[in-house]
Length: 264
Image (cartoon, rainbow, N blue to C red; front, side, top):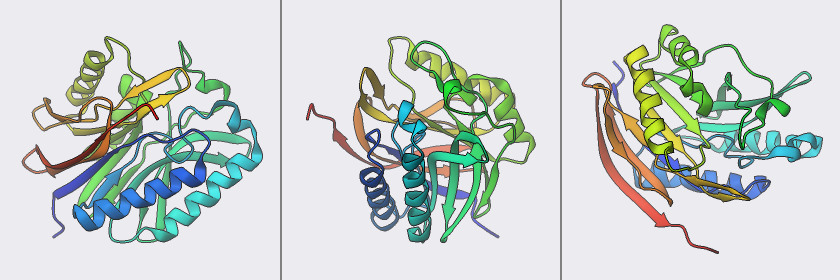
């Protein structure tokens, strides 16, 4: 019987918008470190990590999307010995989607297509992306993982769909900017989704600055009691390791490797 215990690396990193090659290299380096140094079973990257967020009008360039697809194919072929949850762009027919796939053993599962597209204040995703309407639940070594993307967690339906499809835990990849009340509002949304689904939630956010947006990180885990069991620091890059016991509903820190962001 497969283990119901997972060591998860939350990759709270700063990805540069438009630097697909550089971001891909960073992703691979983090994958190798999580696998070989920290013995992680799974590593989770933020929303659109491969392109950086928000890519905005770069998404209107066919060559940019082709380069992103090629980088995703290359990363897929390189991943062995660890499962990877990775945010990327996805083109299907005439539709462009904000997506996440699971890379495992040289194969790619998915994609999951973001269902709830924000279109207010600093967000204009409806200008670029088409929404999805289906859950994605992937079985990873005895644990069924439901995938969500950022705004999906602020509405009830996507999380409920993943739970109804058999998810044991929910993973939410994010590019959620900082503002004064945001931290408390995130906790409120996550705990609401826990009440809806009774599923543990791993929430991974990006960090750093992109133009006028500031991303604070503060990735976190909701345990089986619905409480915030642990939270990564603000404005620090790092791999934040957590040991999840799905049966017991517990989440415990398993080593945090951080680097404070500077102004360079």
